[in-house]
Image (cartoon, rainbow, N blue to C red):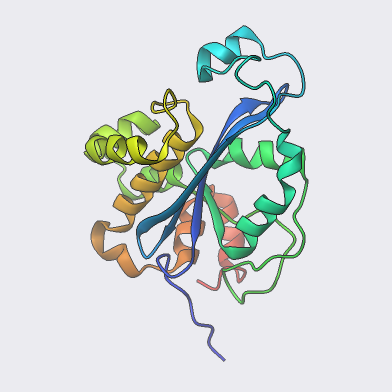
Length: 226
């Protein structure tokens, strides 16, 4: 019996960004959820660091120990993150970073839908969609694939700044701020999904093209049903 392959617009895609490091843990999280090719919800939170925030980290993301005073630790957010994964798939720009920070906090979620292949439930945070790898695969002539470079190349800056003024906290409306970066990645995914007739592409294609070549070949043997 054939398995229906849902398109990427039919399943919520929670585009996430974390600020933090292995030393401090996640100190800021941002989520922009795409459904039907549109951003339907956003959320962002500050989180207490596991220890002192190094000045080099503050120089990157702009958050100091003082900014995080009174915030709850990211570890207290288990229910929220399992709920996100249960209701859709996760995406990020350079997703290995977000995946690593998430796994360093909780190695696995409880059983959740896979949303690809035969839909067999899994206890994994993945499969991830990676907007950086998708852009490299789908628009190989751009040359620069950093978040700001893609926003510029795809002419997304006006829309990003409009969304940031609506959804991001004051003072957190620039790159290296979690929700701002999540919004940027969500707009990139939306733009990439509209290229070359991919508006109805199966979500499994986005997952496959977000993987390294060897991993994609392994999954193509059956897990994604491509």
